[in-house]
Image 1 (cartoon, rainbow, N blue to C red):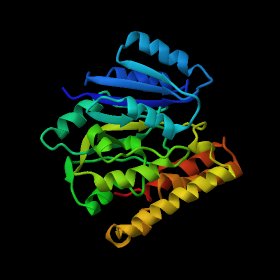
Image 2: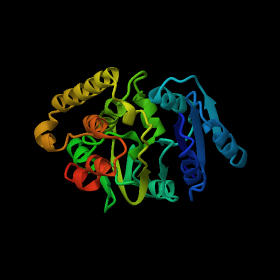
Image 3: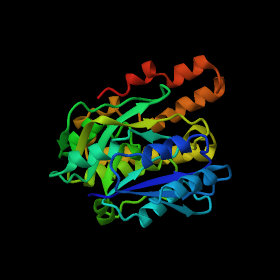
Image 4: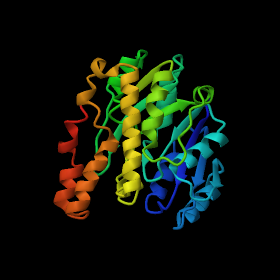
Length: 288
């Protein structure tokens, strides 16, 4: 039975951790290696992780001084031994049959990347649904069907570990918006990308996450760096015309600009939350 290494960077997410970890330890696919990387949390996150580790021996906790999400993911990757790798943000959760369906779908195909659906739990950002199991082989197919240039988030995908190791794919330490630097190259290098219907990753909006607090000039510069990287990638592989990128390159990270608008008006008003994060607004940018 294939082993899945589940890598969970944790930094001050005590409010969300129980739901995240419960969705993992109760997976119908049991052969899991659960790697929690505590990135210097200062709240009760470690206490929660320790409690879960006592009841599930598949959990391994690694501690490091606060070094950021990229470094935490890389630490998890270095310690992973599974056939598959999945990076989960500690404020999100997954369907209980997530890994069972993904691994079953990939039997006989051996795709390097497997993509499943996404549900936004509070109407934030987007929803993604694959209606059919599809094998994507060309660069154009991969980016059109997964919308991976419009949404580079790495947790949307499960990766073969030997594929990541063979291509030396790691995250850029010290960077935020790191998925923009990672996902397009992974898509390009994958032998196949497989889409799997009827199982979902659940995105939970966390107002205290790094992305949602990224208003500083330093973070704006990091965003500009990532956006420039994406534009260079699109030009290098001549994707502009092939996948109609002008209509599709509003990445999740370009919502950074909307966060700035939200900051100007109010973080707390119901009306502003609906305007900035509501499904009716975002759907038009995320048609597949």
